[in-house]
Length: 603
Image 1 (spheres, rainbow, N blue to C red):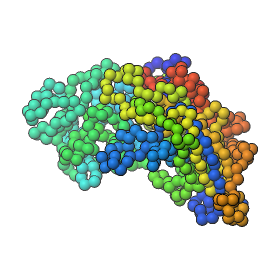
Image 2 (tube, rainbow, N blue to C red):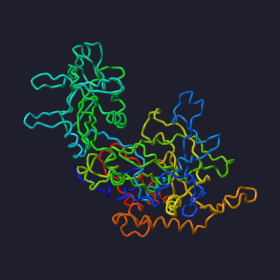
Image 3 (spheres, one colour):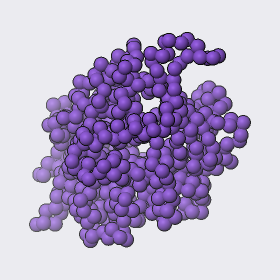
Image 4 (tube, one colour):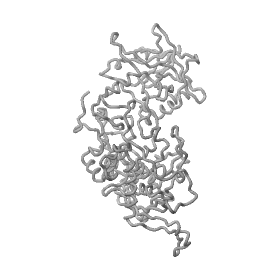
């Protein structure tokens, strides 16, 4: 394949990534506070108080509300609800959303571990892909080509999935003929006649049990100019089941979970797991393999050229979450807490959080802050299988791209560019689709330039931990946060202005009342104190990061990683890219070329 031209044929997307750090930096707080002693205040060395925040919406924002009791009884789902988050009828931004947004920024700025992610094996089918590496990767597991006979030699096996109790097994199909084949091809015309004999009509994406125990499996329509063998009009025939229990293969639970979470499998492709509830023997094709820990694994599908699992999971592409960093407690976990459920081989005890986010309330609750109801642009789910976008690439030559069986690192934390917020509504004609059924449900966002206020209470933080929190809140001039839904279309841009209050713990217990209120001894700090606290945190991180991460930077925002973050947070930068159409989703034709997504500062 030819080389992509970065100047002309680059990938475009409404998002980009902040690259991973090379090392993880531990929190400076001692283990007695981090591991959960919250029954006393340490007023000599720790800081307690609150941060008062003003939040202004720069674009419309939308956060879906919960269901009412009546809606729950009607068996509605959350996606059916278009109301903005409004507990007790009061419009708010939930504290959980604010907390998640700020935690991610703390994690990045403090050189922490890569946060919450779903560890799983992704699936691919690459027999006709534009990328040579992916085609070869697929062939190595599924097939080869015999030059002498000029025929494809399939490596996959065939059998039947059987559900026994709570477990699933594959019973191989019987082997017949001189070559002891479990399956073979049958011309569509012949297959149609065989299917007629059992009183049924041949349909795509279906299978049929014949009276002699064999099964005919029909895939979807296929035409492939690069591989004439695949374009032949035939169906697959699987021999009858071999009931010898010594040959059956148990499908590991992890492979069942991965199969169920394969979001890229077509809607028309049958779900073999669900079919097992109605059919005691579901025909399938499969391959066996060993993972990095030498465990036996199985990939399976409904036709011979099915989607196969990558042998490396997402976790394998996050080196900073590896063995040497498992016992480290970074700033994000120390401040916000973590149960560490699902952490493989982790001996770290659960950590209680020491920050508490309130819901953001309207400054002027009597004003009408809601826009008219409109359907938003069609939102596409994340496509991590697009390795040219989600993995770091050393080359933009399509044949040299690294996939999930390589040692490439994931790109990092995903952020959406800021946009004007003027084009978030669904444009019927602009979508290039005349089907009214795809029109999304209407939503009612909060208007631009609406003001909210909220507080963040903190307890027993070190100066550097408080600095990390303030660093994530007080962004550089011209930058803004993103929150809520509809980010790809420009919703969710907000500006936060923090004010720091620190509690005098000894003074609190000297005076019970202060005027008509309790004597809390919480005092507003000057901007100088806030800036000094942030500077102390920056100095700690710069001192402890690796030379490769630091480079010649004298502040965190000058490091390579945070330069990319700053670009993504710059409001005007995002608007300029929107105007130049550099942050749009690619159409399918362009997407198939697998152009690489440049880093933020190169766009």
